[in-house]
Length: 249
Image (cartoon, rainbow, N blue to C red; front, side):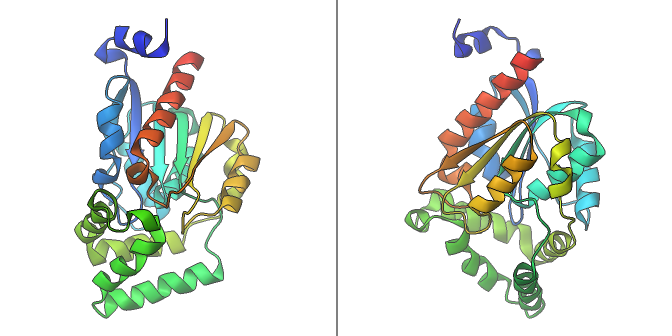
């Protein structure tokens, strides 16, 4: 029996719990394509990542929202949260997808950029930050696409300057997660857009080297927002991860 047919035979109560966590300046909209497409095999929860002012407190809040055991997919900043969740409750995470993220702490250049953002927020220039970031986080071919850049802009404006500043401070204060990568035991997939302006190929290689059971899926002609830029591919990869988790259960 092929995997799709097998999935149709499963009852709704047998769906795999899947927790989706948005990243910085993002809302549940970034996961809308995957939440809709995976409902046949996954009981999807989209976490509220807006509680807490540090990566540790955000991770504690997200864990409080999560099922007892779950597959976890985290994008960008939410990857930092995911690493902390795994340090706190490794046995609860049965499968892991890390999208467009990285494991190290900030370097000097990144911290300087974030400090400039905080200065701009204080000066009332939040909208300028949003527009500055669009070409960094979206592939050039999709900057005029309302389904991609339009959604990224809407999510940022919905998040607002106060929460953006809190997220920025949390990111600046995050720990280096590279030493704890070796402790991640669950099936793991890294999803990365080749033209991601935030996370690099080197960052993906660092995580691959550190996580024993990880594989990397590179999406070509794609920026930072892979869930919106390549929704079908991301959905397919997450579906494969859920199949892997089910087979190991």
